[in-house]
Length: 227
Image (cartoon, rainbow, N blue to C red; front, side, top):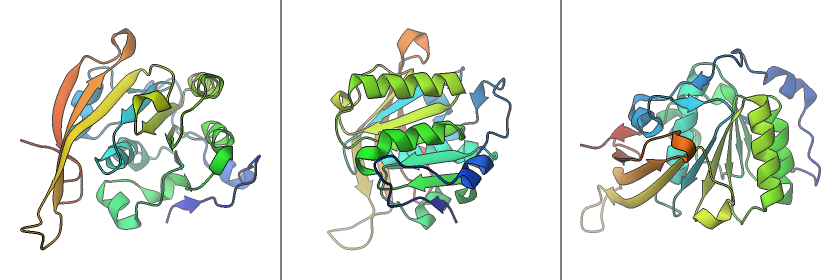
């Protein structure tokens, strides 16, 4: 079961024993974190770099959370610690289906206005930190988090509904469009899979511009390339 940290105060402090456990197991000299095969084309030959910032822009319900959690799946499966801040609980079954190792996730679902402090504390211990932004982030807050993540060689994954919610350019920019569920027939039955188009780009040539069609998720519950 994943770790859960709730009822944060204005200046939240995570359990020191927990933070001691969440120390990176891989040397920071290993510059690249693993990525599941379905996402490799989005990150290009350089892969998922430590200390980089990845922004995922997607309207609610279009697969942004699914894509973001899939970015965590390979690192967590390899033993890297992950932090997730500001994302409502997607469910144990869904996360396991995406390949996330819940034993390696510290989950902070409702930090409120104290979310920058929660992200900052997780950056001190984790290898990769995911945060969903519900409101526009100020330049000073964004700069401080990006600088700290770069200094600690921690990958920062930002999920927003609109580009304006995050004020800084990111090393990797992923944008989801044309997301459509399939499976229900004539209003009956269950949605089975969601096909979406993901566009990738990046600053300073970090990622070549690329477009991929993905199942977010597939009928098997994972993320896969859509033919």
